[in-house]
Each structure stands twice: as C-alpha cells, then as structure tokens.
Length: 203
Ligand code: IMP
Image 1 (cartoon, helix red, strand yellow):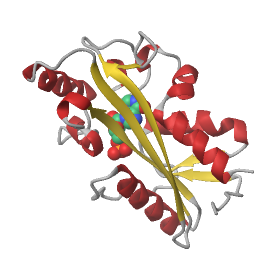
Image 2 (cartoon, helix red, strand yellow):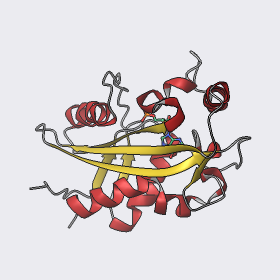
Image 3 (cartoon, protein in one colour):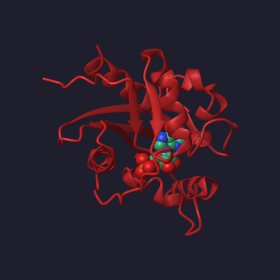
Image 4 (cartoon, helix red, strand yellow):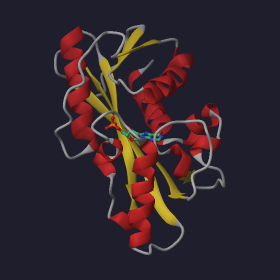
C-alpha cells in the first residue's frame, strides 16, 4: 500500500532551476509549498547508479536523511532510439564542460552522432522522468513518466531548459522550448510522473 504524503511543505531534492520551476508549477494546485534543495543548502550527492530510478533514490534519500523531511527527487533524461538509448542517464553529463553545463554543446553532440549514423527521420526519442519520494525512515515510492517525440535540427524556441529546443513531442510540430510551460507540463515526462505521484500519495 502506498504511503501518503501529509505535510504542507515538500522538499524537492534538485539543484536544477528548470526542474524546480516546473515542480512548483505542477504542485501549486495541491496546496503544498515546494522548497528546493538549494534553499536548504543541501549538497548534491554523486549519481552513481546506471538507472533513472537508482539515481532518483540516491538524491531523495540523501535529502530526506539530511533534513528529517520527506523529499521528492527527479532523475530524468532523454533516450534516443537511433543512439541505442543514449544519452539516457548520462543526459546531464553530455552537457558537462568541466566548468558548468552547456546544453548547446550537448544538443550538438546528439545531432552530430545522429548525422554520423545517417539516422532515418523522424529521429525518435523519449524524455523520461522518475520521481522518488523518500521518507527519513528509509521508505520510498517511485513514479515514472515518459514523453515520446522526435528530435529536430536546427533547434527552435527560447523557453524551457536543457534539451527542450530540439525535442518535438508526439502530436505537435513545435518544440518543448516553443510551448508555454503550462502546455508542456500537461504532456511532459515530468508532468505525467507528477500526476501519478499526486494520485498515489495525496488525499
Ligand atoms: P539529472 O536528472 O539531474 O541527472 O539530469 C537530467 C538532465 O536531463 C537535465 O540536466 C536536462 O538536461 C535533461 N532534462 C530532463 N528533463 C528535461 C526537460 O524537461 N527538458 C529538457 N531537458 C531535460
């Protein structure tokens, strides 16, 4: 049986501003105040697992242990069919410059690898999000959301974050970065995972 969340403050164990803004927006209707890991000065644990759920569990349990509060984490990324699922759990690593993250570099790498393989169009890809809600006593619950779509080049749009400007969700002809956030949240991997989390843990 799923354990319910009953507080009015939810600690979201992420330092990623884009993810946090989406979480605030997604959870607003349920009357919970979202606090980010940055505001609580929590360190970013190393993500040593090779699955989304494994890394999400590391982040959620580290935050719950450090604060004594239930903590929700998101581990997410993009899987590209013609690249055998890469970058997957290494989505953020592809943007790592050694001196911060550069998503233009990461998107260019994805495009160049597809070109080098002469990959067919549409270049199918999925954004994936796994949410884990962990309690200080070690209990946790996990929820997954998947947004299918394809990659486009050159990139389009100014909103969103990360790989949004190259991802066109299924059923649309605009990228996530061309959509308003409210519309993205309705169909995104993170939005779908939050819907499952809310249905299972609230009320
Ligand atoms: P992690 O979950 O912190 O390991 O990083 C996931 C990475 O996936 C982020 O740094 C983003 O680049 C990318 N990502 C996850 N969700 C989205 C999204 O909604 N739009 C664009 N990029 C995303």
